[in-house]
Length: 148
Picture (tube, one colour):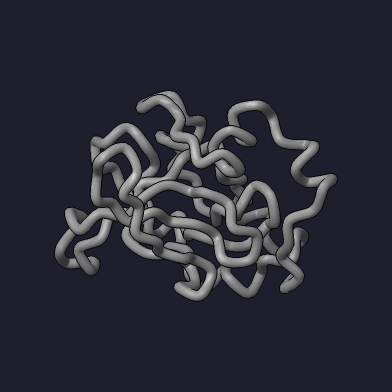
């Protein structure tokens, strides 16, 4: 699977919250995202394009109210952009192939795992369980999961 792109059909299938977050640079309210407490093995992909973004093995509980990851599944699938909106100096995280807004990255993650905290909106993600990865053409990423 390598043809990750934004299509009109994919955008039309987004619910209001996913559209607001991914297409209008929104942020879901803290502690409301459906993946905040998901610890099943699998990967998280861009809800619009299917681009693989994060593995469950990189997910951790940061206490910030959004799903947090220590690293992307493939760094080339993440763009980090300076965000000075709202009078702040942040680093925004966007998917590379379809330019969806995902969240932000902060330098306060676990030091032993690189020190980064990718704070990501659940509304920008779709979770693919380990048992479905091969069937959905993501089998190449199975080696990045912790074996449970």
